[in-house]
Image 1: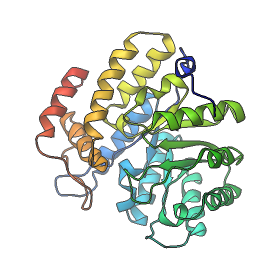
Image 2: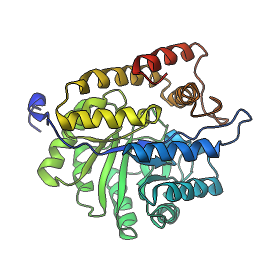
Image 3: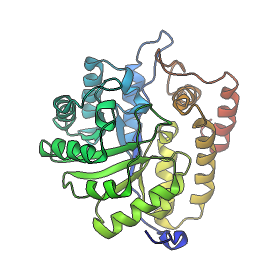
Image 4: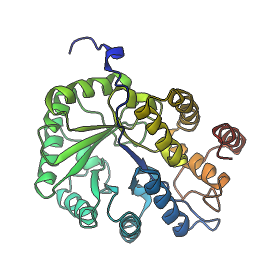
Length: 314
């Protein structure tokens, strides 16, 4: 591919399509806080973002089947079906692809009106790149629409970012209406945007780069975990971009500061930061996370409080 002309990619006053991976708050006793979860899905929806449930932010890897279905039912009831959700299949290293389980998980989402996000797994990602495309195409045969998902290994051990040639093949799957790209690499995402514009302009490149949330300036839309901290501020930022309001840059800078702090290694610790931030905002009763999810140092709380005050939400 030719050298990227990055400044020429900037698209002023573009309408941004925003999706927000929703945190699953927990009570002081360690149980899922269903009232807080319902409220957070609702405020995300009311802000104008599409809630994304059963994603990494929602601890999908740690949920049993009944809990995942309860989250889907809640998202359907709150949004009327205007949501996305991770279609996740739990497996281990060396396990074969379980296509039947993927189709079942995606169907559970689609039957409730949501858009399935085909979440990575060992079985899906450990084969050849051609096998990955074949699997997604087979899933697409059973669905009207779905979202693909490139997730880097800094998020999960079975994460994988695919070649640009393979991404080109993804665009040929008609039921795949977009894909979340979480490499944390601007260059790789710019390459995908150029390819999208050339091959299939209606395809949504959904940035998952919580360290580069201004990728929306270049044509990306988003499905971010960072936006669960303050969905209303992300929606306000997006409206500023559409209106040509220079306030976009200052708000984006402050949100990016939050992202760089909370998405530092080990990256999965951002979920505990999100729980703390929601607790500070009065949106959750505690900053508990489920067993198996990493926690951040206690000193993070005061940094988060300072950021919240600067953002005007505390």
